[in-house]
Image (cartoon, rainbow, N blue to C red):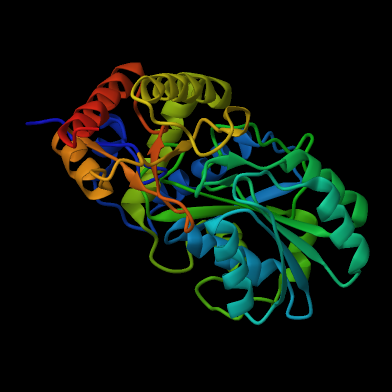
Amino acid sequence: MSRDKILLTPGPLTTTLRTKLAMLNDWGSWDEDFKTITKNLRQSLLKIIKNQGDYTVVPMQGSGTFSVEAAIGTVVPKTGHLLVLDNGAYCRRMATISQKLGIKTTILSFPESEKVALNLVEKALKDDKSITHVGLIHCETGTGILNPLQEISDLCQDKGVGLIVDAMSSFGAYPIEVTSLQFDALIAASGKCLEGVPGMGFVFLRKAIIEGCEHHSPSISLDLYDQYYYMEKTGQWRFTPPTHVVVALYEALLQFFEEGGQPARLARYEANSKLLLEGMKKVGIKPFLKEEDLSAIIITFLAPTATKYSFKTLYEVTKAEGFMLYPGKLTEIETFRVGSIGAINALEMRQAINAITYALDDMAI
């Protein structure tokens, strides 16, 4: 059997054989064994954020975006006002969700090549006292830039506004600990840096706000308040859970802690990212961001300016060599993206660089 293709994407991503094998068994969602896995999964997730009792975590069916919508719809009341900090495509998606839910939404935009500027966020909160919540993407996956989570958390706490964090691409790699942070909701998903498979998200909720969230959600299936209380009461999911995904994520979490947890995972991703940057530099491909602003999650590269360049060709040749890239997410300039996350290390990164080099040679670039 040939090796699966290596996914150099921000999720879905390459998983270990142990994680794949965990999906070979069938589970009854009401069975005590599966309820125990759900309980242990939630406890393991809370361990990552160093919870001391102030937070809970609510698993949710669907992709990460389902959980973002669930968090906004549950945490922000209809009379609320969400300030979305926008420096990329996933920030704008958060704003679209809020607007679709009928919530008053203000978008504070920044260049896609720059981090969210704290002084401008502070000014926006000062100028408009009706703002009740701030929405932040921790790692904007459209470019790979890492936004200042701790500083925004401190500011929101100082101003008395709630914070909703999309940590989809950063959770499990970068430190997110409630010993120093405060947020109302923080969202991540199974198929990212925890190296599970896609199919479920989860939302960390600050317990102090939960009672006030009753009746907020306009959705039945995406109501985190109901999901939380049903799970606390019965140990079960309200509706049919993605059983195989849940078990795979729990197996991935066991491996996460065996590896050494968040510090070890970030170290591996940083090593992958360093190799990638060095290899691309040798063939004349430059990153879109300044090197000091790059994350170890995914890097957006400027496409070659040669007339013979085609992302379709780059993708197809690289795929034939066993590696799958990601198209660019920017609208004004042509780019492509290469991820450093997943169950991969230096060997796979060197092979990937060779595959990209081969593709560029094939286009005579």
